[in-house]
Amino acid sequence: MRRLLAFVLAVLSTALPGLAHAWWQAEWSYRKPILLDGGPQGAAIGADAGRAPVLVRLHTGNFSFQGVSDTGADLRFVAGDDKTVLNHQIEQFDPLLGMALVWVDVPALSAGAPQQIWMYYGNPKAPASGNGQRSFDPDYTLVYHFAETGAPARDTTAYGNHAQTTTVTAEGSVLGRGAQLAATPLMLPASPSLQVAAGGAFTFSAWVRPDALGVRQVVYARRDGAGELVLGIDQGVPFVQVNGQRSAPGQPVQAGQWSHLAVKADAGGVALLVGGREAARLAQPLPALNTAAAVGADPGGDAASTAFNGVIDELRLSKVARPGALLLADAVSQGADSRLTQFGPDEQQAGKSHFGFILAAMPLDAWVVVAVLALMMVVSWLIMIGKGRSFNAMARANEAFIGHFRETAGNALESLAQNDKVPAAVRVDSSLWRLYAVAVEELRRRRANGYDTNAVSASTIGAIRAAMDGVQVRETEKMASRMNWLSTTIEGAPYVGLFGTVIGIMLVFVVAAMAGAVDINSVAPGMAAALLCTAAGLGVAIPALFGYNWLAARSDAIGADMAVFVDEFSTRLAEEQGEGSRLRSAAPARSA
Picture 1 (cartoon, rainbow, N blue to C red):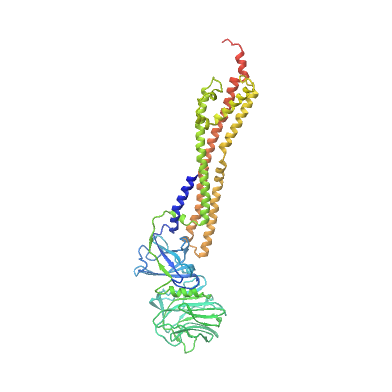
Picture 2: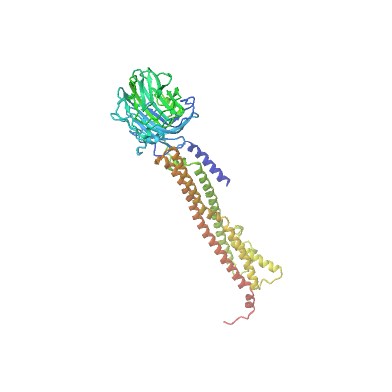
């Protein structure tokens, strides 16, 4: 047992380091580690941002574009546990130019310790799985990437708030393509999902690059009766205006340079953020706004307002007041020099088997179930091996003893006990010898008490047979000992495995729901790991079933041999030393 435990510990010590560097799925040949650092040495976002769509900007400086699909269809992003698949959306993917923009849905962007995610690629059979509706949380009511050319901007979210007017495409924007604005505004739809209640929550964010600075250039305007919300730039100074109240001057922006502007509102007022940091605040909550909004101009404004002349990109609206840490993360990570994302060297799969990937995907509860099943397997195999060796030795010893016993035909029944013809090994292992020994001991005890053992009565034979029956029962009980563990393993191991499978499947669906991932790649590894528990239960029970049946057959055969020997010994005792034998020896010989 100690050697077995040492072997198991040695196997675990070699296997666990491999699991620490697990590979998500065998079909993907390559992966790249991506470190998300929101701490002081990275993006310094100051507080946890929560769920965030993080931009992964790939270029020839951090990615070779070798071994990946021409469309990026085989890209998969997996959390640091190498199990949880993260939603993503490909905005642009061009391996010829060596550039790609991918939005990855990070469930919890932390300002503390850096987080690692994995980008897997190199599976030519993988279908495209990018989906913007799942990559941006449901509180985003409008997201424009402006990736379209010659068509109105399309909303990435599930709300479908597509632009009502077409803009000129601007190449080489801060994020691929942008929208060139001049005199004609970009009109947004007046849909129910974009309505804002009085004092309600709201967030606007966008990247802007003024071509020239002017007076009261309008970036975003929405009016509904007497209510208004205007975001603009006045001679390079961003401002926000609510119902005629205008914010104090804040951090200026420069012509020809990209700046991140955001406005967020709640019941306490409206805040203006420049570069992700608060620049001004109004203690005025928003009015009810249910009409169509305009980007780049204020169609219902006064003559003093002018159209925005420049490029806008990555326009987002939300029905909640986004945390400042999230807006800061957007500002510091979406530019050309992201301080949030750091890329590690590409890794190539070392050829792990599919079974290895299943083991890597197993959660702790599955390992607990497998450990219980492994214990049941070890105990059942030890019992089967021990019983098998014991039964084989007993069968061989019984065969040898019965040969010696039958050689004594015509001699006294006690002759085998009086000489050394039966080897010591046979005496130790043979159950027939123990039956024989108790019968001989009964005869000797009666002789010592003055009984005539040359004329044994029927009652004495019955008493000797009863003593042999007692030994036979004890021998049968000895053979049956610990067989109940095998029957428990046969019946219980599949249920233990099934229990692990049910718990594992429950956890798979819970984790998938929490991560917002419902595709097959996100649930398949966990499902396979859960089903492994059932397979392990069957793997423990099936050998135990075969072993139990074989041992039961051997036990029945040995029991039959003992029953036959009891009958044979009793018959010889009655013939050779019973009262009938004395009468036959005393009668005169009959003539032929």
